[in-house]
Length: 470
Ligand code: BES
Ligand code: ZN
Ligand code: ZN
Image (cartoon, rainbow, N blue to C red; front, side, top):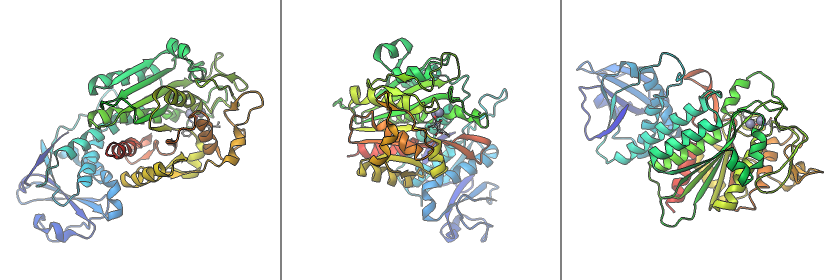
């Protein structure tokens, strides 16, 4: 699919006609009949034919509260009808806001996602050229929508990829290729370098796998002042078997998605580079496979970490906080960013708390929490703040090491994980942890099994844009 801007609508050719709930009056001049079976309800569409035999797709924008999810409407329309589209189609956008136009393009592009990448027979890509017609100048908005949609599809592809292919090394190669194409810097630290630099927690988690761990450092720093504005740290467990504290086999295959945080970090840095945002960002991805083997780390082990703090392992399935600990320590020691945000599919506890509707947000910074919350509503990638009261901190106590990776208690799991991470940020004032276990991977109308959602790309990119504009 390609996208362009056009000033006028040709009503003799195919076009998409967006309509707000109960606002048919506003588009009546374009309708071939007075009363179509359509009232503009959110995420509905109705196909009509114009006088020239051209297709007209009425699409329902719904009410104001639906504007944050507008891409769903366009994604659905394109997903279900694009196979009938000709070489070009227009979108009547005169009455759409810039945000709505961006969302429409994101949705159309999201419909191009090919989940069956590993099928021997692939779907043919849609080659339609889309003209967004409005008298306003929207070229950069179209570009932003296109790049955002493409990035979402790319990170969905990564999260849905099978774990035998998507090894830590594969993620490193993905980042190197992306960096070359989008013109940013990428360094992949492999086993020898990780040992030399002291990424002991990452190495411990990866000990049981033939697919060796890596730490990926991506840098997009276009400003003359080299101070890093934002560092993003992502959990990149390419498969989480639980390790020796092995998980039950039901739904174990879904643990290929345990690198959802890493995918967001890789995607956001690529997107920031493509959009040429005026902000210095560093992405750190700590990637390992948590496998079962004679060489695996064990419950009872005491391991070292990049920070120098020792950790008693109570449960090898609490591995995400270990790799993130090293990533966060690396960031505060070497990058010293203004803002520090980590993203991770970290706990089952957050899924039990917030379900599939919001990420768990942990921070002591009220301004960051308010900004992230507001943006979350705006892009429909919502966050919900959970507590980090001092009283919970005793759960991290270990008799024999500096701290332990799990309390053994089934209570306050997402908070315990967040407070574990907090022990490695050296009191950084602008730190936030987002537990995306419930939102990164789930049910979708476009697949029979659970699949990647693309959550986080719009949320973090908008947050970055807000900071870049300050
Ligand atoms: N990767 C899981 C968390 C997870 C659960 C992600 C469900 C996506 C969906 C994580 O590594 C894990 O196993 N966490 C344990 C921690 C526990 C052993 C302290 C959990 O939350 O049960
Ligand atoms: Zn785990
Ligand atoms: Zn995990």
